Length: 135
Image 1: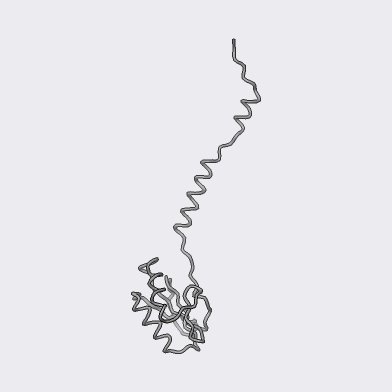
Image 2 (image 1 turned 60 degrees about the horizontal axis):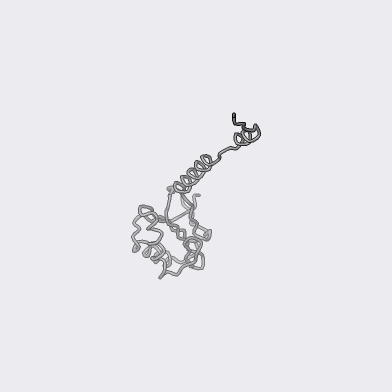
C-alpha cells in the first residue's frame, strides 16, 4: 500500500518564502545606524553673530544661544540663567568630552554673555567657543 501524496499540497509548501532571516538583518542594520548616528542639536534661535576675519570649525556637543533680548536657549528651549548649569550638566552626561559653542546675538548685552560663559564653565565644560560669522 503506497502512500499517495497529492501534488498540490507539496507544491504549496515549496512556494512559501521564509522572510524571518531578512527581517533579522534589517532590524540589526537599523539598530546599528541608530546607535552610530549623531544628532544635530539646534539652540532654538538664529542670532545675528559678530563678523570676523578668521574662524575655526567646531563640533560642539552643547549649543547655547543668546537672543537680542538676552533670552537664553538650549535645544530649542528657553531657559533661565539659573537653570542653565543644570541643562549643561545633563547634556554633558551624554557626551562627556564634547565642548560647547555659544551663539550670542550682536545686539545682546555683553554681561549676559559673560554670565552664560561662567555658568557653562561652572558646569564642567572647559572647551567653550563663541560662534561668529566669517566675512
